[in-house]
Image (cartoon, rainbow, N blue to C red; front, top):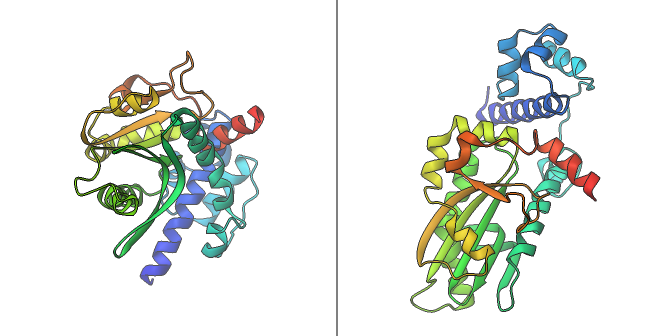
Length: 276
């Protein structure tokens, strides 16, 4: 099979697995429940959810057991990215809510907040989810609601760590010394799905985000962060306002003792819609 076809098959399998996992967790079923109700081996259900390819019969049996209608959708990726049919159009809902909550909490007089900000550095171009800057201090937040492909997520985040601050400094004419401090944060949805991924790949995410989220706390508190460059990871719930009595975010160091706030993306989206 051609590499492009293999890549497309892999993407379809990952999306199908995420859809199955979302529905299973919405119903509060275990993997064993799905296996028993569908007649598909437990190991096959586990691999299917993880994004491995399975037989069409296995997909159909699992989907039917979960009350879903089995179908195959061939979607033009250009339409998907433009907000057309398919999971891509719904994918932005929780992501947008996270950005809105962060922008609201970070707003201060004299501080600039930017959402989905484009930037360009020589041959590399991209967009930053949430930016805040004040004088010569920069905060960059990349929001993640799930991790269908950890390598892609790591590559995107690393590219922004390398190029974003420099490109923005040049555009804003910050000066020869550049930023006094740059704070990179990977903000992840506080869900069972994401926590499971982080626990499986703790070493990977620790390498990407080795620092504590103290800098983010300083930004949220209106304090000036310490100098230098840091990268940290936090879990946050867009339904919990920053500054409320309930804990707003948690770091990688808290991973072993965290309880999820949502089962997965679908549950978070449903909760946000109920909240208006």
